[in-house]
Image (cartoon, rainbow, N blue to C red):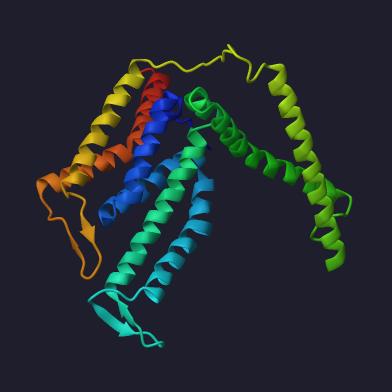
Length: 298
C-alpha cells in the first residue's frame, strides 16, 4: 500500500530546493561514503513513495545498469597504479579503474532514483507555479511534456487492450500481420495525440492563456512549517558546501586511491549529508507516528 507523503505537502519551493541540493551533491561528491548515503536514502524514499514498484524497478533496471557500468569502465579505462591482472588484449586491469567504475555506477543509480522521487513529488502544477512567471513558455512546455508521457503510456495500454479484444494485437498472427497491427496501433495513438493537442490548445485559449493581466489561482502558501524547513535546508546546504570547499569530501581514484582523513569534521559532514538526504523519510515517519498516537487515543 502506498503511503501518504508528508514532504509533498510542503511548499513547492521547499521541494524544489531539496531536490536541487541532493542532485547537486550526488553528482559532484564522489566520496564513496557520500554516494552510498545518497543511494541508500534515495531507495528508502522511493520505496516509501512507490512501494513495491520501486523495489521491482531497482531489481529489474538499476541493478543490471549498475553492473554494466561497473564492468565497462575497467574494460576501457586502464589507469591506476595497482595492477591486478592483464586482459586478453594485453591491457592492464587495475583496482583503481574497477573502483571508479563502481563509483560511477553508484552515482548513476542514485541520480535515477532521486529523479523518480522528484517526478512523484514535483508535479506539473508545482513546476508551473514556481516558474510560470519567470519562464512561462518554457515552464508550460516542460510541464506538458512531463504530463504527456504518462498519459500517452496509459492511452497506449487502453488501445492495445482494445485491439487485443478484436484479435488485432501485436502478439497474434504472422510477422507481417503483427507489423500491420503495430502500425494500426501507432496510427491510432498519433491521431489521439493530435486531437489531445487541439483540445488542450482550445482549453488554454478559453481560459485566457497569454492575455495581458491574466491572473492564476494557487493553493500554495508559505507557512511557518515551510520557514523551518527552509532554514534547515539552507543550513545543510551552506554546511556541506563549506565542507566541500574545505576538502572534507575530497577523494581521488587515479593514480592511487586517496581521500580526506577521517576526523570529527569530515565525519560531521557525512552526518549532515545523511540527515539532509533522510529529511523526507524522517518527516514521514514522524507524521506516521503522530497519526498512530492520535488513532490510539494516547
